[in-house]
Length: 143
Image 1 (cartoon, rainbow, N blue to C red):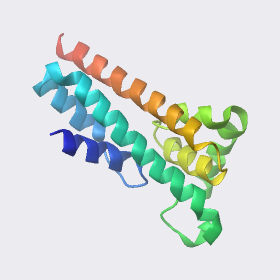
Image 2 (tube, rainbow, N blue to C red):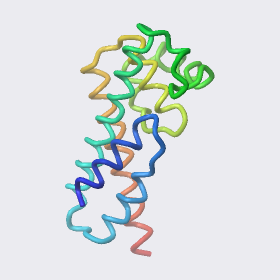
Image 3 (cartoon, helix red, strand yellow):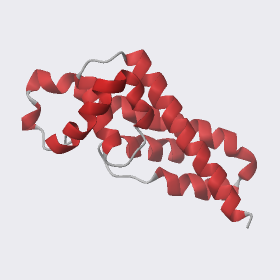
Image 4 (tube, rainbow, N blue to C red):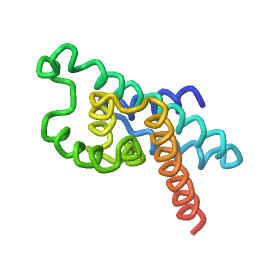
């Protein structure tokens, strides 16, 4: 159960499509007493997935990213750049956001931002998102 959640959260944070939120809410509804374990596993898996995208950005310009069709397109990268310029690694607090999240991680890597600051920001942002999701899911379930 935890391994499946980890994998789902990991894949969801890479450039591959995924929906770890649905799995997380399903698991929390089945075993609500394990919500902390589920939160930790999902947050760590999603953060590691974000770091993979960060690493792809870090190395992409060494090979010329125009050759890789699976990278965030230029318009997604353009949306991410103002955030990174203004907030640096802390912009990765928003790395969970649809569309821009993957691009933020990728461009942060390409910009060679601090790996430690980026990891901490990703972990905080992704954990808050999952915690709010669990809280909202539990609140709706108790109506």
